[in-house]
Length: 142
Image 1 (cartoon, rainbow, N blue to C red):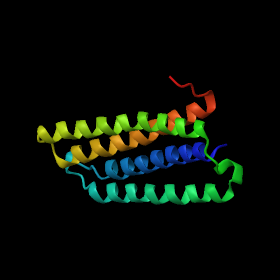
Image 2 (image 1 turned 180 degrees about the vertical axis):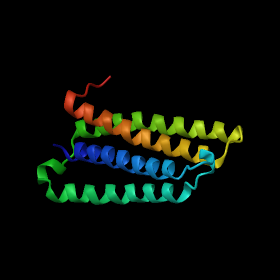
Image 3 (image 1 turned 30 degrees about the horizontal axis):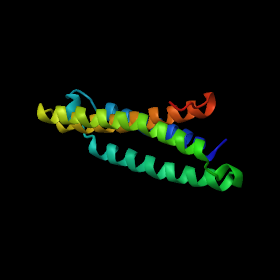
Image 4 (image 1 turned 90 degrees about the horizontal axis):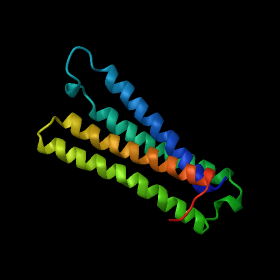
């Protein structure tokens, strides 16, 4: 397995686990009040920070145990990476535009922050899935 594919798997798993942990913590705090009044900032920062650290550590570990041949990137690896990044970036943009719309409509900060976070998570998940799919099923240039 190429190092880039391993990195995509790591990003996929870390993103899913971190966002799931965030949802569990925030939804566990709802109680009787409205969802928009839940204390979300600390879990948001901790899960994002934890995901970044976990991604770095797991990528380093994967690099240490990988054979030297797997660490080389060729043209196909670069094209697959670019393909996956383009797909992922589209969801980051959708999240940003959604957040902007929520801000213009004067929604609570809770909804704006969560729209941005969801956009980043979907970006990471779908970009990683696109990369994995391209590695597993083949990649055809347009």
